[in-house]
Figure 1 (cartoon, rainbow, N blue to C red):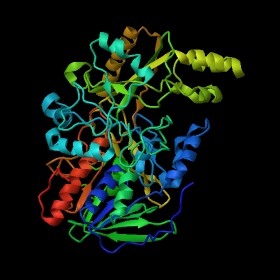
Figure 2: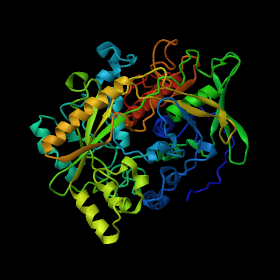
Figure 3: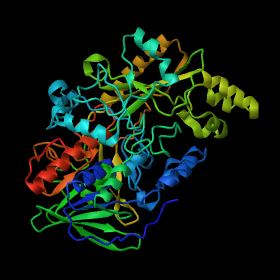
Figure 4: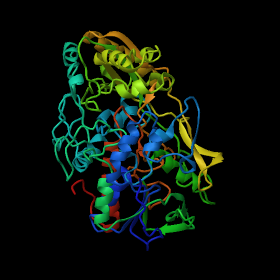
Length: 562
């Protein structure tokens, strides 16, 4: 259950900084600024979840009849949305509203973007270049890895780095080790996956204890989530107001500065939080939506939207998957996350035409007990290999479990996450025909994969088939295809970064072009998405943004050293 604090939810006196959202992008900014003496208020749309409640949430997640929304109390009028375009997009399976945000359910995978991701137009004629380089962000990547507690090891195809990983890499799982000879035979490097999951005790949290439920619940706290920095910020004097969704931003008469964030409280009250500086950190979807809702005579198309690009260039990471069988036990469920991957095919001249991360899967199918209990019609392509046929064969009890065990023991799987170039028509807008609990239009996602990403998925599937063939896997099949891919549920783009106010929303310091005291700390500022998971880049940009805000407020020179 969720703890209900008797917290004061009225607006505070004018603080230095008001942060909207307490996921990694918001909590890191709040903590970094509070550590240097700034008065910070954080407005969080959702509640605060007790660490003590997480074991119950894990049980809820493991129940065959459960849904992601039920695990983290998502859904209903508060979280309503609509979807249009080529793909129906399931938004509420990929976000959490509450202190810690979506990091409460993420898998903890933390690769860096590669140098070429910042220069895609120059190198490959794709999208636009970022206005900052990998070299600009590299010191902040190093800091972010320390803040999150990333376990990893360097590899030949990873981006260059100035420091060692703060934690040793996780041991290679049994199922991942089975791939080693095949990768070696094909001259493909298999490297440890960097993860913000403690491989040893770190930062007052235990090492991973192997519950295997990292997504959607880590009950031990070994996996980093943003409550770490939210609570640290509070200890340093920041104030977090929960269940306080911001419904609009107000600005001064000239439209040059934001003056207040207007938020609602559970008792139906409406409050205005004034501040000297505002930072939006509520994700690519809700950040764009909040700006579009904040219309005025000066900004008739939404705040900070003189370019008309707020909500545009929404990106994702599509995924393709291949399964097969080998003649030995594979133990695909014994860890719950992959421990090995390769970045060898990330660059466009090393394989498929788009960037790719190839990852042997340590969760090669639905857990055995779940597969036995859930109706086949509900499993769809979530169960790999031969299991669906067995479940529909009229067998029951011990006989069914024995057959399922036989089919799972040799099951292997491998997948590829691919780059999705930015496209103008992929966007977050407002659905004026549907309103949320506050009576505001809900976000509408208009989304399609695009020919470039689908082509990369197709080429990646051929690459995966070659690896499983070398492994000696039989009965190879693709439960996830280029025609019907999975998605990493990474929300990228919608307030892209740039130097030209006509072609971007925020500047290289993540400050909006239109308003001098409004910043965005989110993957919404990404210009391109690469194939790498975005959270570490969000964290690095958040630390960089905090340095800039501190420098602006104090006159001190921004520095990457804390």
